[in-house]
Image (cartoon, rainbow, N blue to C red; front, side, top):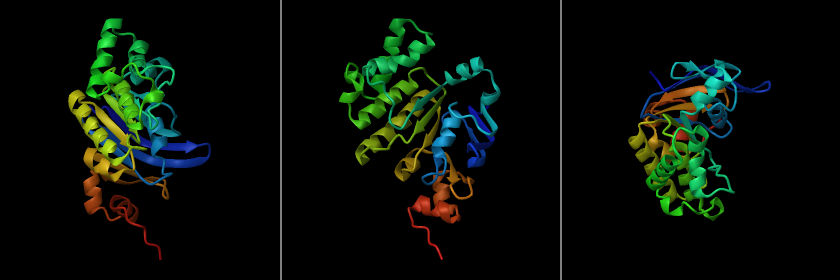
Length: 250
């Protein structure tokens, strides 16, 4: 059974249509890229997938549970099985690195304090930030913040990870290191990962499959692996994006 299944999703802000007819599936160990130009609705889709924005129509299934048709208590249980890395990392500025990573474990309260500490230090070691556990977010570089945010996203062993523009604001070397880290975490955990990004290097390095959202038609115009889209898709918008070309107009 897929970890995530989206059926005929329609997203609006008030009367303004963002995207419609969205369908996708995510299975364990898969990395799925949500692609498209600026303003096409990538982040809006992500908000709906993680429970922050109710769709106008359609369904978001976590396993066999229809998230938006479930009770608040069931939704809370379903959200406990996802991890999210926001574009800014969204670390609590008043909390140390270790305390930021401990937070999901403390909220779930399934482990003893000693087990929580051990688990948090384990994932900080995975991302190369264990020695920075007592530092404050203000003392970290952008890449370090992303690593801490990633550690917090995986600390409770979720089956699904959602990454919003993880490479945004990073230099090329830091971006490559973060891509390798994401692959390592996928291999360690077997989690299914949805990544929202416009960075082609990361898309080709990470994604097994993808969905391409179009700002003009306000619906997906391509599905499949990014390399297939690059090599075989004939839609001018998809080709321009995947090859970083300028769209030619009459």
